[in-house]
Amino acid sequence: MIAGRGMVMVRQRRAGAVGDADAPWIVDGGERVAGQDGVRRLDAIEAGLRTHWAVKRVGSGATDVDVERTLYAIHDLDYLATLHDLSELMVLTRYVAPGMRPDIPAGPALIAAADEAIRTTITAARHVADGSRFSYALCRPPGHHAGPAFCGGYCYLNSAAAAAVTLREAGMGPVGILDLDLHYPNGTSAIAAGMGDVLLHSLHAWPVSNAPTDPVLPRTGRERLIEFRGTPDPEAYLDAVDESLDQISTRCRSLVLSLGYDTIAGDPHGGWEFEPGIFAAIGSLLAESGLPVCVVQEGGYALERLAECSSAFSAGLLGAEVVVA
Image (tube, rainbow, N blue to C red):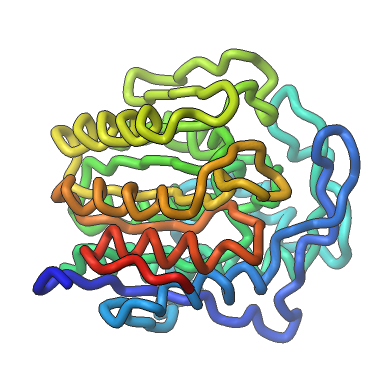
């Protein structure tokens, strides 16, 4: 282990009396299929992270006021009111991403879990602001498809944007967001476009299934989009990650990593064929960048392989031996 290098892991707490509802269904490939997002994902990822002694688990310390204030900074007030007034599971046809069709339902238990994801992310970002080199917001549902006033793809509230807001408020801007989930972060893009000191880089699959146009074009000059047809060559992919980190590190003081494990072979919402070991290389590149990093959990639904992914990632980040979880 490299001396002095560790990571704070903030595990999402239970969502109170309404429970921790799994996603009931999602429209994928034009068909309604059983949802894959649930608490079991967090359990599997945590198991992999905790194979390394330098990963320290802490609780979510942000208050309800912190959560509310941060949500007001990134989402439309009417949208937030609608989400938090829900009394039953329903499809919010009014709040679909522009040009898209509804693909998920929303309900009080799911929104409570999304609130807890924001609380977790604020806490993780504050650990970075307080001097931790690396923190990991282990939270769900994911957030990068949630825009100012739209939801989709399991996402209702944007955790990566919440992390960026928290870091900016702590004086750690400009902030870079690097999205390494399989899917284009349409929600993060829409929110980050209004933040003049936030850069967004995304490496994702082509064709893009969650945007009305193809190809997707950057919203601003602060956005870099790299689309890969089919599974990219791992070396080419890592070169692209390295180039993005080089660009971000020259312009930013801190980094939010939207991390999806849905690029590996066998992911039910995937299509690429990476092996979990690629995340060790990604972690190493992040460590070499010199930036303080707040990791925010996005996708990744192959339950039997998630621990191996997260173990490899933390090993690369922390300079440790890769452990088979």
